[in-house]
Image (cartoon, rainbow, N blue to C red; front, side):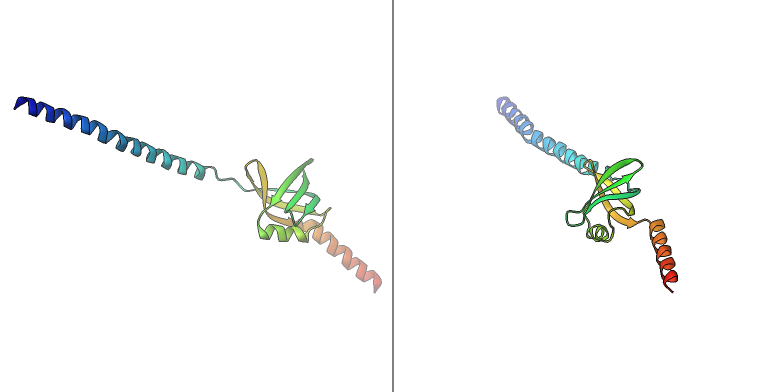
Length: 133
């Protein structure tokens, strides 16, 4: 009788040893997956802006280059609104570009012609119409 009890105890211990390691391993994997999902949320890009002269623009490709603070900055416009705004500006205009950096690239979220340039053009138009009268 003592022999059967001992064999039964050994069988339970072996069965337990085989049953629990996969459970522990699965729990560790689930913990790692949760950690991986949380990591990208911390990498939110901060929105920035740059104002300068528009050197080149391609509305179809959504690419533009702005000379701001004595250096050329290349942007990619991915949103429809940014591409539409890119169609409205022309090379030589002073523009303000709001952008974020993603994967080492500057992605433009909005493109606006600078107000000073627009006001100057309106003043010139008014002077031209007054002189004609």
